[in-house]
Amino acid sequence: MQVCTPYHCPDNPAPRFLFGMSQRRFRELVRHVWLRGADSIYIFNLGYPTTPQLVTPAFSFESVEDVRSVLDELLAHREFLDKGEPMNFAVPKLGSPDPIWSGLRLGDKCLVRTFTLGPTAVRLEVPAFAGVAVTLDAPPAGASYLIHRDGRVEAVGE
Image (tube, rainbow, N blue to C red):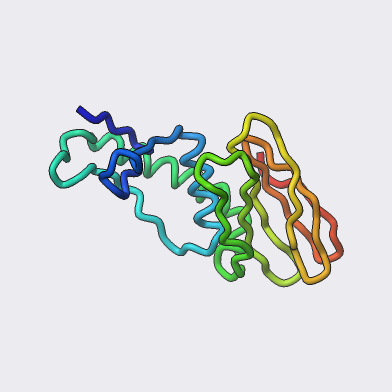
């Protein structure tokens, strides 16, 4: 019997595509979805039509709370969510420790989130504006930055 979690994302029933994630990773994924320009997110995971009993309604409520808490965090920068332009859609190979970043550009500022699936922080270069690239830390716990057109970087959140 397959065990589902609220963060189990089976897009394909083939066993090699079934995977789960921790609450921390799920919340990180949600941040990156918003920071890549999504205007909505489908968050209920009720299992496959043939096995709906594997996921209880409590799992759906946990997912709602996770997405709500991330959205509350990002609403401190609502103007980016409402009007920002996505900066990046690249995704490293599944399971890679390479850094991941997402961001929204608006006017003379960018809101960027970084993280790595690896065990230690790594650094990466983010092309914030034409002719302006900044080097940022991408820790396993994630980090958010506000980048100004002149290259100044401010850590935000947490």
